[in-house]
Image 1 (cartoon, one colour):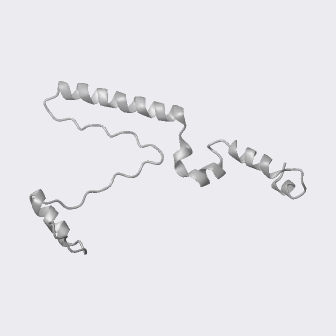
Image 2 (cartoon, helix red, strand yellow):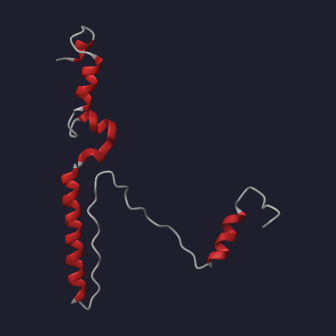
Image 3 (cartoon, rainbow, N blue to C red):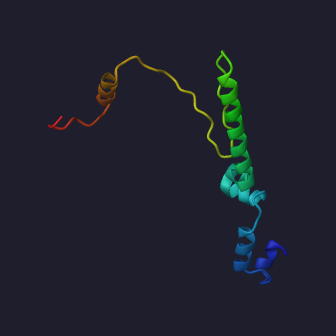
Length: 114
């Protein structure tokens, strides 16, 4: 079966749609359409969850008997996860001052009730 068979009548559009829907998740067409999210199936996600739970348990046991602080393990990265962002800045200002500062950049004038 070839894609050119669409134009000879040997392959219908309905049959082509059915074939495309049945492509395995490893197929280039599926990856191009859905991105890296389809790289893992249900079994891989379950295994990653088990791995994360085991790492947390080992961390808890290591933390219990150790006078030094042990770093908490990070979860295993899954396909489609967004990279962990970097946090910039910080402030020692109280929350009310920060809210006032943010409101000062609002282009709409405050209503009469404020």
